[in-house]
Amino acid sequence: MKKICVVLPVVFLALPNFGAFAQAPPQPQRPPDGGTHEVLISILIPSQPNAPFSATVKTEWIRQLADGSTITLVNHRAIARDKAGRIFQERRLLVPDDGQQQSPVTQIEISDPVAHELYICVPQEQVCQVELFSAPADSPSPLAPLTPKQPGTPIAEDLGKRSINSIETIGRRETVTIPTGTMGNNSPLLMKREFWYAPQLGVNLSSSRQDPRFGKQSFEVIDVVVGDPDPAVFKVPAGSKVIDLRKSGDTSPPPPSQ
Image (cartoon, rainbow, N blue to C red; front, side, top):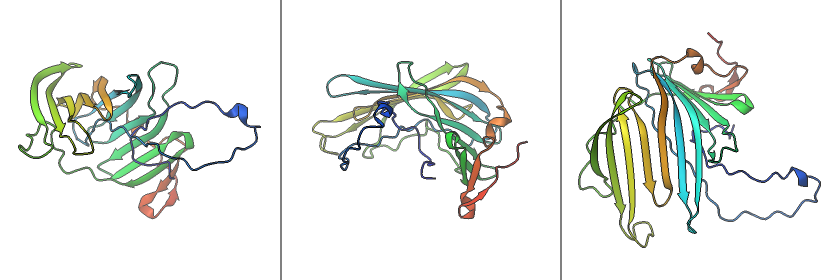
């Protein structure tokens, strides 16, 4: 079950097909040196009751390399929340923005603040794990005042109101400067974040972050439908083996469909 973990989509780069070399003699292996493991953090969806909706999150990640070239990765994933605060989320691989590759579902997450259950499912393996879940007692608004004069505190700029998908949002821009030498940098680093928050839904319908270390990350919540989604999306995928981590790893059959 090492493949099941609560992480967001990891950068996925298509590798060559080595199937044609299956008959080649094995080559001596050497320990890998270097490399990174990058995780892209998506928008936050709190377990807010009485604010049901369904939508699609459109993600774009643009990174500029030292030679001036860029890498652009994208995906679209489904999200939903019902009036009880249950949340459904797809997790999909990020793929190049060339329209040549599918963005497969890697995980399905279903969190239930009433039953205190979190299901994390891997559809390709037909396996789910369930663990205890408790929604935070209070989710602070992203529009909350910032603490002044603290190191690393962003400078906030109110952007007013804007309608997105016929839903009223409130915008804010935040900038942070990392001084020279703070993390080995030989010049100041400027980071910018802009978001448009919908009080009606308790989520950011548009959010972007520019960071010279990671590039530009953009998230757009599109195709928003206000109202309770189809209850079927909160069911464990049919035929899945369920591993109940609340019972020391015992395996149990999936709950019956209703």
